[in-house]
Length: 343
Image 1: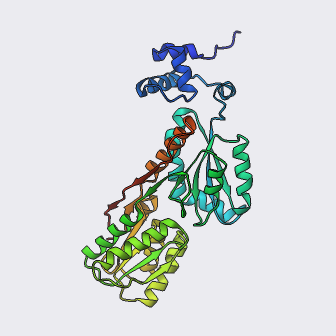
Image 2: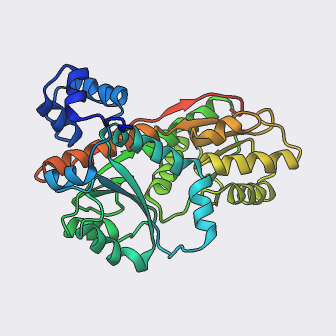
Image 3: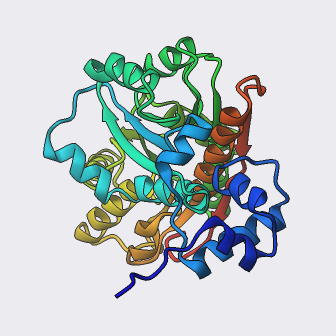
């Protein structure tokens, strides 16, 4: 019995109503194609079931069709705790979702690389040797050398979050100071007078910006000093920080946590201490992640549009792959306050 014929480029072109060359340009990731035709072609790919020949495409474009998502930390993480954090923290899942919203329609694969200080040189070597066409980088430590190493090696890369020191590399970031100021203004508007903060690690640029934005906004309302405990962006650290704040400031009536997971931990501690939210203590988080919706009561938080930011990082990287001489760019997103039940 004759096997069923596999769909071809000509089949896709016929269904899309375009030329074979247009189909080829779209599938090979050549981006100077009208967006409407681009959509028609990929719809036709879906209808026909056409599967691009990745080997042939790589020979034409000299690309692997793969982008690396690099999570860079100061330590080497071959242990389970870091893997557990990656797959359980809403932050990372939202980044992956945003990247794939841009890469998947283009047939570009995403490869996850988690590297500590000992793995930076190997990563740069792997990228130089063509294991991926470029990288989107989540750089966690403040003085991470990896962004500079990628720039020096002329490897196409985009950061999510600004680098701690000037590096010739494109990035997307959030106006973190503005977001923290929104939290401060909300707590003041509610009449909170004894306000405290659970900050993130002091060596992370986003933590520094949120800290300074919150303090500056409160200073404009006469709050010269804000009690603070430091967490590490986990729920457990938020719970521990809240316990320390209650011990030192038993009359506190407002808390800002620098991410939602720490705010969730703070809510659990307040509940265990018999403090009612928001009547006794108002709580505001940061990120507007799934943890904010899951919290009880639902968490008032600062919206961090991670999916949009990750999608823009993917677009910036694809632009640089198409044009290595493209200008190094930064895109800064504005936060918004999402009012729910805790403040």
